[in-house]
Image (cartoon, rainbow, N blue to C red; front, side, top):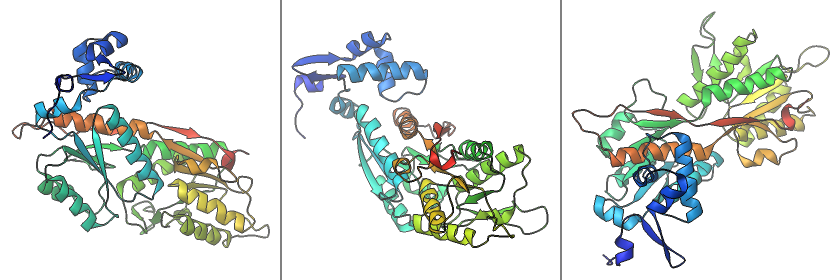
Length: 377
């Protein structure tokens, strides 16, 4: 191991243009104690959000980074966390991984990003690598392995689960605002004058009268956050007294071409002498489908938003540049990343006692509704 010089070994200091910026400098700028700065920059979650932001802003302004090497040597850690996502070419997980990398860098941590290819084998390999002691903890978004399997692989190693809505969670989790965001998306369509609202990306099967919402399914494999988005959409319709027909929940893979084909099928269902479309509004469970649906409707001469208003979910950048531009529920990925790191670092710094483990916590990422041309009538 390379020896540290005296300045490098001093906890909480770095060289900045030949001078030393210390933890006390940050504390003075932020108007808090040095110990509070130390705890906040390590990810302690006990402080108010305004105080945390003030400390982080002071650290950025002064160019301060806690001395990672000294802290790692003292704590016996690597200062590295793992991030596992299902696909790096997909916009949502790519943005999340980038946000976590940025936020971790501000805390003096390094990140290794791994792709699981949305497969059981890929997820298990990720877990096995994590138990090699190289990473201090993991931020993981599994779909093919159970919480119990994960626990058997990683033991007491800290992990934050992305998108875990289970009733009895085994791990801390951060989730997207699936229910509330979807509810606001459909409320927005209703405010735009839509009354026949379709939901693209998940299906509802009516097994018996009065049970139209009892079973949900999805071509890409059912997942809890899809169900949350469906239920949020249905809640908004219930509020408005709009009866939802199960046939307006359209099962479709979450990609552009499949959504485009689904839009073609919708147009083929025109009814009546006037050729009425089955929907006048479409809530798409992600932005890629929203863009595909808009393209598919345009292929068939259907105008967006004059004939069908469209809103997506996630807030990917591409939605601002389509024609028409796509309204969306934009997830605050920086907030998501901060919350995931806060939970993970708290577990790393304060490991659970097996006899009295800390109860898992679930945090919800912030979001905002962005209205664009696809819902502006």
